[in-house]
Amino acid sequence: MSRAGDNAAKVCAFLRDHPKVEKVGYLGFLEEGSRQADIYNRHCSGAGSTFSLYLKGGEKEAFAFLDSLRIAHLAVSLGGTETLASAPAAMTHLSVPDERKAALDITPNLVRISIGVEDADDLVADFENALRGV
Image 1 (cartoon, helix red, strand yellow):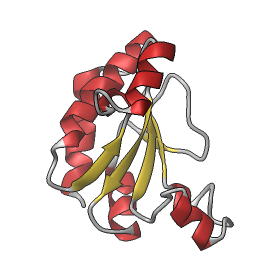
Image 2 (cartoon, helix red, strand yellow):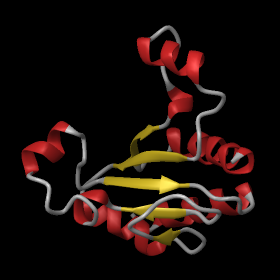
Image 3 (cartoon, one colour):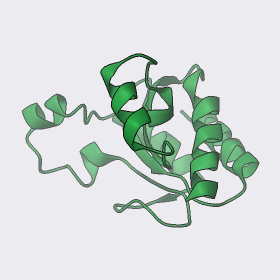
């Protein structure tokens, strides 16, 4: 978990300011002083390895990104020693009513990622390459 968490921190730092990324939902980016950060700081020892990536665009851009990944693999279940990614709106949450998806911020441009224990620099390069395809 420590290795995956460290890898996620590096990948998220790369993704955070990328021009093709709308936002990254990652516990390590909670606003200091916010209620969420206070809860996190009291109860967690790390930000974990799973996060939400919102690409600029929609489903087309999300799947262009997913299709371009070489190290990370497309999966419907996240968590493991390998890096996995999914598009919840089109996969696990496909049958959820649109209003409920909207309330949960499950949008067509959302990619959920669970970082594994591969080399962090290799993961960043994989994500960088995949973003070129968006």
